[in-house]
Image 1 (cartoon, rainbow, N blue to C red):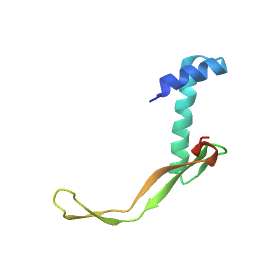
Image 2 (spheres, one colour):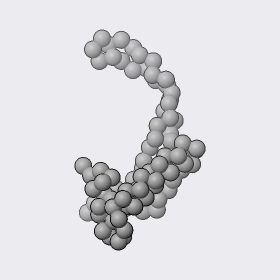
Image 3 (cartoon, rainbow, N blue to C red):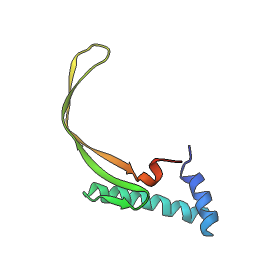
Image 4 (tube, rainbow, N blue to C red):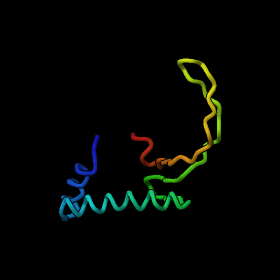
Length: 90
């Protein structure tokens, strides 16, 4: 798995900037993406994918140990839908 520090090393080399600046830009991009999606916006990055919130309806589930029914309340989920350009690798 690659984290922000590993990703920032590669971005810094390719962009000719410091690793700290690259990490700051990546972190700010992620924070802004979450902030905009939380406000109700869809973030569409052409050729990459779409970030959005989707409503998940309330439902009834079962506890696998006791088989008792559990009411799961409705909630909004943070969702990423990948573009077909990155979804399928040939």
